[in-house]
Image (cartoon, rainbow, N blue to C red):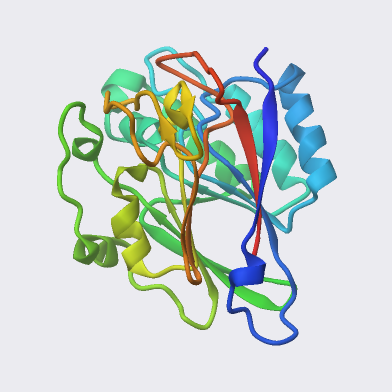
Length: 264
């Protein structure tokens, strides 16, 4: 079993949160891909208990979008997390393709979507959800992009105007968080203007090279600059999680699985 680390980012010290505003602590999970960290993810859940966030944010690809797969592992984890914390879940490319091609993937997406709803997890598919934590308003926006934006060996433009059309504008009076799975467009996400943008998808680039780079991305980009880590600044941060599982290339070198904790 591959080990995971807890990666902590203290954004609050550089965040314009107003006098007397309570500190908010979030856990960010992405790219589980139906793997287990300990039996039934017991080690991950133990780490979550220790960190005790105010809410849990999931960046997508918690399931594996392949024929014959089930959502059971991811659903068990979501159910356990939801017993303790609010959970917001965005779409990754695996959830997206299972949704749009039921003739290929069967009831995989519908079983996952209905299971999330049953246990109280909020799934955002180009949607917004506001919540209040410790007296502070938090706006979470989940951006879904089509399969064309994940194609190998090419980069399709994604404009700021398109993002705004799909999910609207950030709320300047709230903590605005954008969950956008593909970090290829991180620069554009940051221009959207939220306080924190959360991405995954690259699994840390298989082989970790320094703070941000990896060897290769799932779309076969060599030495991607945004494979993992903290980006941005000035009240507009981007976090790319290395993932809590793996898929396609199930190898990690100098690039452990991550449970990300950040404070705003």
